[in-house]
Structure formats: structure tokens, C-alpha cells
Amino acid sequence: MAIPDNSTIASSQLLVSFSNTMHKWIMNIIGVYCIFFTFINIYLNNIDQAYATVITLPFLAISMLLYRKGYIYESKVINIMQMLCVITVLSVIAGTMSMMFMYYFPLMIASLILFQGEQAKTAVIVTIVSFVSLIIVIRLDESLAGINFNKVQLKAEQFANIIGVCSLCILLLFFSNRSMNKIRNTLIEKGDLLQKKNEQLTDVIYTRDKMMSVISHDLRSPIIALNSAMNVFTDQEIDPLLQKQIVSDLKLKSSHLLAMIDDVLQWSKAQSESINCSIDKISIGHFKNYLIELVDLIGAVKNIKLELEFKFNPTTDFILCDKNLMEAVLRNLVSNAIKFSNEGSKLKVSATDKDNKCEISIQDFGKGLTEKQIADIKNGNTFTTKGTAMENGHGLGLQLVQEFLKKQDSELGVESNPGQGSRFYFSVPFHENN
Image (cartoon, rainbow, N blue to C red):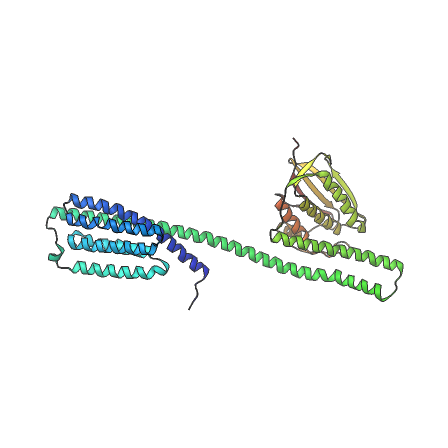
């Protein structure tokens, strides 16, 4: 036996929900119609038909009470059955010529609308019973039907019943179409939401697989180098100059390994949206000092000179940002710039006023980027390229920069020419001193 999927179950639940709403509308329509039809019969002096119509109201009240108590299925059954009985009685009293039997058709339509999902069998049973009752009423002997031979009154009854049946059918179709439109719109919204979630999941899986491939490759190289160096130190005595060179190389590789592990952890947090962004008032001087210390630390290997151009008072001017995320942005951009800088070159970092915002720019004069690489950066695609000293990368740095800037309502800009270097820049708002 086939097991229904979640979408089928959701659709069935929606149909049942809207059929319950339709039941409420139908009860209200029947109540108004019965009162109106009673007065019409009294006016036409059809007392028997008036009595038969009035009897509907107590049963309708019971049906409404059950509905409010939560016994919706029972309420539907009582409502449909009392309608079936009243239509049958009125058809017998008024006779076939009065066209009263035509009310069986809106009754069958109503039953098909009211009973949805697991209750669909009830709709089939009611439809069959209604159809059989219709055949029996039509085939009854005219003497039993008690036809009114007053032609004027008969025409009035025919006209009233035709108008009544048409009105009921139109109302049922109107509310049914309205409910189906709501169901369709709800399913479309859920379908769009599901598609977006599937696309997000596909992107996450693709990025995860790509990152695992990059990480597994990039982690091996420094770890193998560290292990080999340790073996050299333990297995043999080495020249002090060579020892100094190996230690320097170990320091570089361990720093690279630590930076990569830090980026991987930050990337993982960013993907799980567990990184909180707290915008605060931070002194521009703090980031100026941070950049000086950062370039001294990681730029010393290539003898990189830092050129700072901060056109602000470092103690009185402030920007609005998240301190930790901004430091991570600057660290990744500076590390990336140094990686692609030639030995002995300079790194230009500036903070200027542009469009009433603080634009921070980091410019190197190294390898530069191709048009494809710039397009990949703008599209958020990860890629790795060896630095000027054959440094390896892991492709996470710029992706982290873009995600962290996005959390601060900013975005990364890129300008570059192959062989002439690259400039990365972004803007953050000033904090206006009161």
C-alpha cells in the first residue's frame, strides 16, 4: 500500500479545513433561506410547505451547536440529512410540477464540497441517496404528490423554486471557488518556500563538500611539514643556521594552519547563523592600531611596508560596526593582500569620507586578479590561488569577508588589474557625535 507523502497530507488537511469553513457558510445560507422561504409560502398560502420549512430551523440550530462544540463531522451529517428530508417532504407536498425537486442538485453539490479527505465516502453515500430520492419523488403518482392545480400559484412556485435553486448553486460555486483559490495560493506559497529551502540546502551541501575537499588538501601540507621538521630535530643534530631557518618556516606554516582553522570555525558559525552581530560605536583609532600590529606580525616575512592614510582623528572619530567582525574582515583582507604582494613591496590602507560614510580601502601592488576571479568574488564563489611566495590558500577568506560585511549592512568592492595589484574596499557609517 502506497504511503502518502507530506504534500498529499498537507493538501488533504487544507481541503478539510476549507470544507469546514464552507460548512459554516452553508449553515448561515440555509438559515436565511429557510426564513425567507417560510414567508414566501405563507404569502402563497402554502401552510404545509411553511410548516415543513420551519422544522428545518431547530435541526439547523443543533447542527450549529455541534459545530461550535467541535463535532464538525456530526454537524455536517445532521445538516445534510435534515436538508435531504426537508427537500423530499416539500417535493412530495408541492408536487413535481412545482420544480421543488430541483433542490436535490445544490444538495448534492453541497455534500461533495462539505465532505473532503477521509470523509469523501460520506459525500458519495449522500449523493447516491439524494439521487435515488430524486428518482422516487419524480416517479411518484401525481395524486400522491398533491399538485396544486391553481395555475397562477403553480407558476409562482415554479418561478420561486427556479430562482432559489439557481441562487443556491451560484452561492455554492462562489464560495467553493473562493476556498479553492485560497488552497491554491497556500500550496503555491508552501511550494515556493520548499523550493527555496531545497536550493539553500543544495548550496550548503555543495559548499560543505567543496570546503571539505579544500580543507583535507590544505591541512595535509603544513601538518606534513611540521611532522618532517620535528623528525629532523629529534633524529639528528643540525646546524644552528639551518635550525633557525627551519624554525622560521615552522612559524610561518603554523601561523597559516592556525589562520585556516580559525577561518574554518568562523565559516562554520556563519553557515549555522550562530554569529551574532552587535553594532556599536568603535573608535577609528582602534582599527588603525590593529592594522599596524597586524602588518608588523604577518608582513615581516615579506618585508611589507605599511602606508596608512587615515583622514580622521583617531581619538574623536567613531564608526558604527561590530568590533570582532570588523577585525576579522581586516585580518582576512590584509592577509590576502600580503599573500599576493611581492617581497619588499608596500600595502596601502586608507580610511576616507565618501558619501557621508567611512570607506576603508586595502590596496596591494602584487599579482592582481583576472576578470573571472573578480566575477567569482562578486558571485560568492570560492577559489584558491598560490601567492607570490607560492603560499597556499583555502578559499574561505573572501567568502567570510563578504558574509561578515553583509551582517553589518555593507558589501565588498573590488578593483584590480593583472600584474598591478588589487584594491578591496567597503563602507560603514560614521557615529555622529552629539
